[in-house]
Length: 254
Image (cartoon, rainbow, N blue to C red; front, top):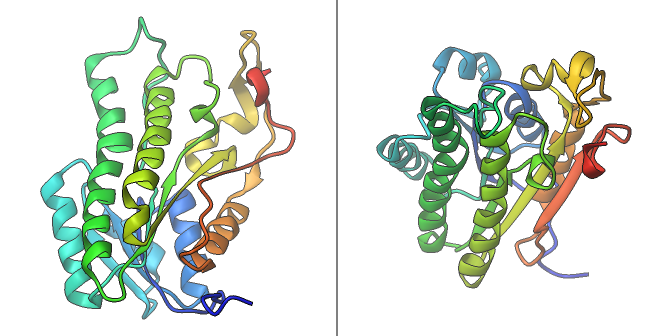
């Protein structure tokens, strides 16, 4: 057995963006239960505090991931409080308005790309900078992708493009950061039951133009998957992983 093997109880400092709701909230609760220190980052302090529930391992930092200065301030706070960051879960994201390529407005396009792509880059950049210089060196960055990184939903051009961009970001990070002890993963999630996907369980538009319900899964299973990746030693990487409802449309969205 490798001497570097860890257990789920090994303490880590984890930053989660978009921690106030959905997958971010469920993952925060799971990692706190595993004994990790979790920094909850997001724009709405109230929802972050509701997620933290006053637990001693939770720290709330108001953060706008679309602002490079706000992201720098987040990681300054992490460095000052903990001296290091072991894991970044790049989770903040928006779906945006339903629109095809000929319908998308400038405002809707820029909102989705600023949050889902630029925000992920800003956070990864600051996390990697700290991970490269801390002692012991290294860490893990997990990017929240989507099965839209493989096949789109109808009328989802901005979201789909953003998640394809996350695939490129993850691949570039793995190449550029592997020699600095940083492991990078992308988790592509399909129909986890959250407020963001609430409509899919009842009236999801299909590739053939029909509207019908789709299967969903409890977001706790996504959190379990992330917790497993967090528990791995840094000489083990999971570059990409998909977790989804077994019966949801996926291949060809049909």
